[in-house]
Image (cartoon, rainbow over all chains, first blue to last red; front, side, top):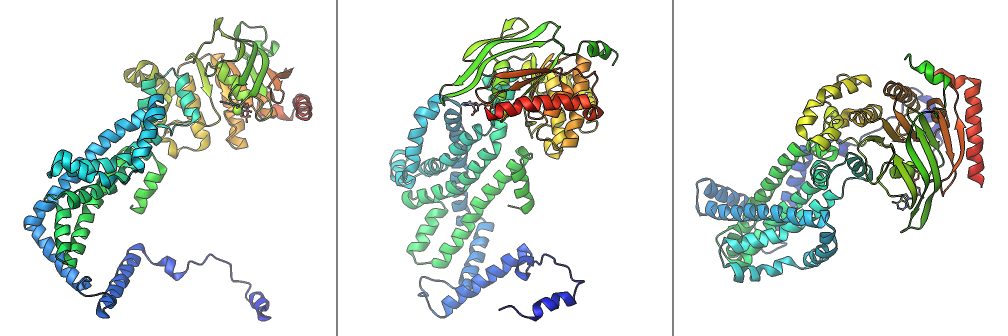
Length: 288
Length: 270
Ligand SMILES: Nc1ncnc2c1ncn2[C@@H]1O[C@H](COP(=O)(O)OP(=O)(O)OP(=O)(O)O)[C@@H](O)[C@H]1O
Ligand SMILES: [Mg+2]
């Protein structure tokens, strides 16, 4: 069903050149696209609220949520009780993260560098990793009490596995040629580890750390849900039990800043140490 | 370049003191049941340039790894300067197909890495001056502090050459060192290689896929058969030294290339 003029058309205009055309939607700058999407989302939300698609008791309006975000923000800035709760959760997250990094790195070394670790320890780690780890929360509470320690333990327990995997994968990242080169230089095992395997494994290690930053917040909040305490997770639980849904939404939003902040710090450190890695550098340019 | 006249008279370099001696070296990879090398006998005379040419998978890299002490032979013996090779040896320089520079180290830090591994950081710092000279020698003046990601493939290979030379090895084992480069760069690098080797009177074993490269650089070319690798033929290259690229248009060069090619073809159809 071709058009008879289609050919004469292009013959008639020989000066036109064939160029790549970027469609309108691909030319929208990233920030504008993000804002547009947010506005769209808010409109849909508002519509769902106005037409009562979901009961108003359990579904707040965007406006109510915004007001509550401002209220909570004010409470945090003026050092209200919520700041104390946020501080508690922050402590749990940071301590859990540091413990996960330390233990994860050591286990990663064991598994990635020694035959014993790879053969004997690895299968157990795989098995434990396959367990639903949050189910250990009551155990941690009974061992460590209702204080911060049980939350730190759960957070670290959940976050440690990606660090182990990242470290072990990094230790295997050096290729055959690089290893042979080190052997021809008469390098000791320790030297090969420090001068070759650890540096070359840094990108893997850091991607493990980034996964851990997300999981460690999950661990801390679940720990608070199940073991009480004074953190943000507890505030969420209380707000939810009072059907104060705007508050729940708004607490979740503030909590996500905690995870994002940790992620950002890890990214900054990564850029200092892994400046030579192409993907890392590209990510930085895109602004991930 | 005055000592070259002597070489021209005695081209095959077979007269000198033996540096490497291989007797009946065989290799079978037991786990995969691959018979890679079959009774290789090889003697490298001091100061000679030898090439090994053969099709892919015939065991050339395996031979080099055995000579470097990175792999044990299944049978036979390897001697370097009269002593049996029992493990990795620091007194040889080795180069692979890829430059294998470490991206977190600048060019000069890559060059002094062997010193750092052998004698520590202080010795490596002291070797910087020597490394500057080497980088200058291969035309990388001004790139000393650049990271490998900013170097072209040819430049990276030149840094790798410097790293190989920093320990001043007198024996060089080269496994297709320039095969990843484009032809122009490759010819240039080969001439550089010849210059450096002649200057230091190094003993060189070069593994290559390129007949022309083998002929233009070597005193002696071994043609290897398909797996299991065995030396089919040794072709003496009696072109005068120093070699230059225009020798490639020499009729005698063409003859030598053809002779090697005929041996290779025979092997391919056996
Ligand atoms: N570690 C190993 N384990 C088992 N088999 C191996 C091992 N290394 C090499 N081989 C086998 O030995 C044979 C020779 O390999 P080698 O790498 O020496 O070939 P090559 O001549 O260098 O080939 P190319 O020109 O492609 O580099 C191949 O068939 C390869 O599969
Ligand atoms: Mg090879």
